[in-house]
Length: 289
Image (cartoon, rainbow, N blue to C red; front, side, top):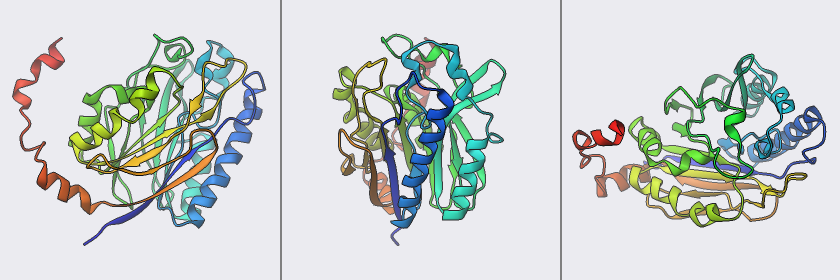
């Protein structure tokens, strides 16, 4: 029997330049995304995922302590609580990536999972942090994630997340599949250049290798005053066969909607028995090096 799910991915440019008051940016970006979430619910979406660090610019383009002011505890912080109330009111599952404060001076790049009844289910903390590319100074702000690769049972199915730079590491994508993920989201902030060539290669490959649906989200536009490059959008959804179900534009704010059928996972895995044919006993060198 079909298991249809309607997915919404939100890609958006920032409302203000990065030299504006962080709190002003945050309030404006939250309002902007709430309007998109309302639209998604009106169009029948059952699960919606926001972009990486959705309520600000990609402030990791510089190293400045003033951006610590954007951090919040999870789940007790105001943004997570607002999104729990929104999910309950609209009856949809939300994936909400924000700047988490665990304790004073201890911060993570984190995504929350909120079920359609407003229940906060848990969180994922970004595992792999870039610090090697100009304009991507994430280790100045975040500690590496320490929660593994959790998968959460939601009203629509089993959902997992990895965040932006995580997508370059297939080990985490495999862990999500082995942990039961049917849908994996990858909220990102990535600019034109080397990564654009990989944008539509790596993640369809993860979907195929693990037999799940994958939704990739990237913000759009350039962000002054840093101007580290063009965030090129092109958010998309691929199926377990690696086929593109829906793709967003390159240069504009957009709610991308895709209709998927989770029954395709079983059909695909029954054809390609990658999990059956794994040889984990031979993989020890991967974690020994």
